Length: 179
Length: 355
Ligand SMILES: [Zn+2]
Ligand SMILES: [Zn+2]
Image (cartoon, rainbow over the protein chains, first blue to last red):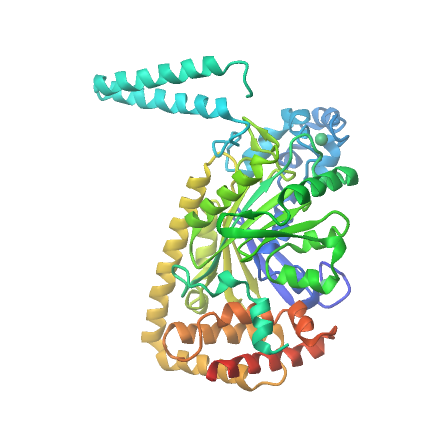
């Protein structure tokens, strides 16, 4: 068997990985395997590449959505000029505006890659997200308040309500500042 | 250069520290993918914007000190030879992918080599942080601090709904990839990894191992990392990984005990045969070296082999890669010469232990 990478030398390293329940096999010659750094952390790209090849859910329903897809293929990002067709082919965006340009078609991809999720709930950059932090805190406090009400702990619920009110006032004051 | 000097040069200072559960976990890595606002991603191929990113990072961060990381030094791909690139890759300070961007690729490396930031890899910035042994939450904390430091002087591409925007859809959201490198010889020997890997997979984690001709993973080394980056907070990602890793550690410990009870003498024989091969062979190819190193490391962990330091597996795994072998040989080596050189280096390294 020839090395999948260079197609020149005999493959001697057989590399298997399991991604989302699917077993993928790699057959590389020793040089390529070493070059790929198969034994270290740097190897991420190699493995994700396989993942990407069946990342796109549209492939399976090609017939039904053929028409829809033909129009999607020609959508182009104004920021970098990448078309949706090219994005699907290379599996990589060209700039942050691509996210908006292709937004109608991305959620099924995100769901597939991120176990059904489409929304970020993690860190928010400090400089960008002064208000975002507050919005998120208000949401959390509102959930807590509801829970206290359910537990009939009205005193604590009132405390939380005051904190929410305070945060909302701060948001109001910040209005016009950097967001 | 003496072998000791060479090793000191090759092994990053943090690798000598003994981390938590270091009998099973070799190292922990946290990686954060970040891009700058309103600049096309490196994947767009736009050369001038990559140059601007590099210029900005050089101006703001080269030779700057930050807390315990001390000074960061910028290494540009355009300025170094291919063997030096290979060495940086083998030290895990950058990816092979970055080495290929010889025009605008660069890496900022902290003085203790625990942190490195790749510039113009697939994303503008890839912040990497290593920890010896198992140290997921500590590593995350440090990486977040570094991220904050970068954010003070740059603007990130971030979107309220999708989080940190990355060139690959598999990284969007937190941009966080947390990985743990584990040495699992007993689970491998008893064939349990083939059963466990798909189970771990169902939990949204990726297990990677290397397979030679047989069914055993090469060097019994496995990397477990998160797949999902969107829809979960950084802390939850880390916690979920941590709980799985802890279970794997527990299973490996139980299996080691079981193997010792069931077939102690066979195991001891295997370990000392491998020790013999490392100590005396004149030609050794990388796969055999990996297997023997794994056995010897297990022997050290089980207390069967004494007077050899634990870090020998981590160390020789790094040292016996082609880039380092050639760096040490001070010339390029053919594959056959490498096997010969590898055997020499391992023998010499083992001798260092005895005095
Ligand atoms: Zn090859
Ligand atoms: Zn774009």
